Image (cartoon, rainbow, N blue to C red; front, side):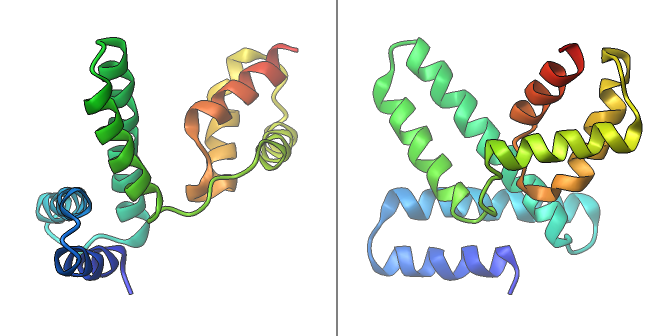
Length: 148
């Protein structure tokens, strides 16, 4: 069963339960996936669906932060609630220990010794981590390791 199928099923359940905020968030996700499918002109792979969900999650997190800085707490909470719904469709993120292990493996495989090789290390680390790594956190660990 694809992510779109799960979202469609959960939207119907939310409608039956009259959970309006959840239904709106799920419709937004469904729309983002459908638009990407139309843009590609073919059904999306699971990897592509995950990438879209991660992009949507990042947008919600950034919006919540911006609303909070602007003193608009209610909107920030609404964005965080949508982000939490999106997280439910993504695989569990890796722990810091798992990320550190991946960073070490990527550095060993690429033979990187300086910050100039950060892009190479990041590419390998992302390939190893698959869909489960937070890019910002991974980048931070690679930078720390290459500088130290």
